[in-house]
Picture (tube, rainbow, N blue to C red):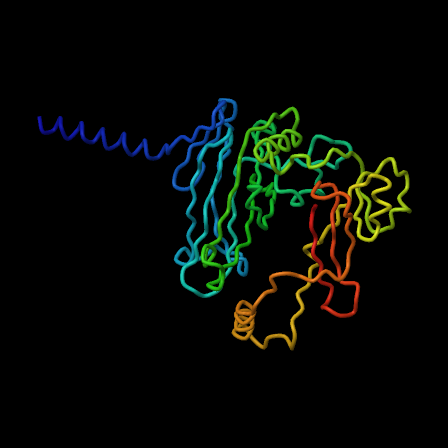
Length: 344
């Protein structure tokens, strides 16, 4: 009797262990589901059919040595959830200690590649030149040659990331180059959050289907804000616009009347990569001095309002959302190229 009980108990333990190996099924509906175990996707199914060899896992890499990062210094906390017909991979990388440091988080997708085209011969594929210019990509299952998946960054939590195909390894990585500092705001202090979405696509439409899926998941980001149709003209005067019937938008600034006469929307823009912060004095001598200066800046008072000393405004059309006022410094006094932009 005791042997029978022991034998039965061993079967229960074995079944429990096998169940743990299989992991938990996260089902997004319509046959799109994943097996999630140990903070990794062990398998994926689309339209109820398994994608052969497709899986996903995390890697932490020291960008300075290209070797695996010290597990005692970094950890990944991630979860997979189903929502709105997609699988959402949300998590955070946590750095131990208080010293500023860096690490690369690689989301490695096995059994897939990046189907790319030239934008001419293969109009349904993502043009190679636009890879990493957009926060999304298509994934092609190597075993079937079918573009079954779309992958993208959360539109409300965009960060620096890079898609990279590894043909020899039959894999694709999405790399997040993370930095950590004790001087960051509290919710980011020694922490780096990330959010990735996976969703099924129609293989007949390739990247077009990936775009459509992304639009569906983040509709507010792609809602039309104007009923105008046409091109956008910049870096020239309105009167020089060729074929005016082809254009509906202009950079504006200094051409309010001309733009209004042509019923063109004024949409000034700022290149964030070209913004410059100018500080007095010399460069900090070392890290400690740089931190001290930034802390001093944090303690300085900021103005509650800005004096308008340049710019143009249409006073006849108020709060319509049709035009934009761009304030700029047109006099020698008052600072170095400060500008503020307001949509009306």
